[in-house]
Image (cartoon, rainbow, N blue to C red; front, side, top):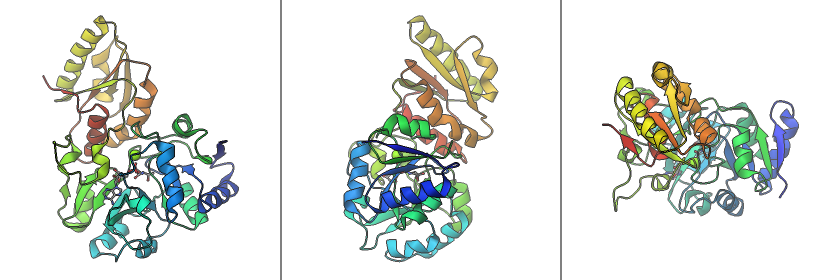
Length: 346
Ligand code: TXA
Ligand code: MG
């Protein structure tokens, strides 16, 4: 299949209107959002949604998020709109928050993987909103990567994974947030299933105490049922080992220096994902400064791009753990999964 590539700036309305028609008629379009690039299809068309799973090689038991362009669209997608959902939508939509609630009858089983709940989000990216409006239907969209790889935060990442497999890629430049949306379920006690740019602290300011699923920072135990099917699959893995060092920045940097020397002596190609605070610790080594430990959102914005930059070019990536407060929780969730929970703390 020939994949058409549009530039969101130069081909503005023509491009999004055309891409919207492609979605409505059953095709696949990759598009920028403020979090990561999405791979969109008509969310009311089970056949079109099946094509997303094929293009990504995604396990069919992993449900998708429906993307809407206005808040009132949730009325058709959920059985009803609970009070705390309304408060969250008013506080954070458009933006990087996905809300799960009991689904209505119009939603095909392909979207929800047979669950009786559905995830909905209104993105804030202008191109995403224009595309959803042009499609005139809720747009089902997972991240636009081959399943298991780091999520795409630039059109180049999408092209690497999806060229020849989908109809259109809209290039809207780099994604601002860089990690996927926060996912919260409002069925039962509100629980964060995946941390993201909208933090637990921000959510608790609006609806009071919420739980965070324990699987956010550790692997599922044998026989444990995943609150979100996405938790049980391998994620964000580059084509090399990833090793995480814990502790204060001094401690983490000294563990990394020691392990780097050992790996280097064995002939392994290494890179360190460092921070402004630790730059001077890695003198003479191969390092890549990806952000500031005092601003975890800067690390979130760069993590997936850095994993893709070094994937296949080195044998091992070393990275520092950071505190799990605010956006640090989202960063550690992605980094730990990328490493397969390979953590050094000695
Ligand atoms: O930022 C984002 O959310 C991006 C952009 C494109 O919007 N999308 C995204 O989609 O990250 P995806 O499919 O890669 O991640 C959706 C996550 C998965 O972990 C899935 O298991 C979970 O949401 N999910 C979706 N529907 C669910 C449901 N009904 N119950 C529990 N988990 C659900
Ligand atoms: Mg994904």
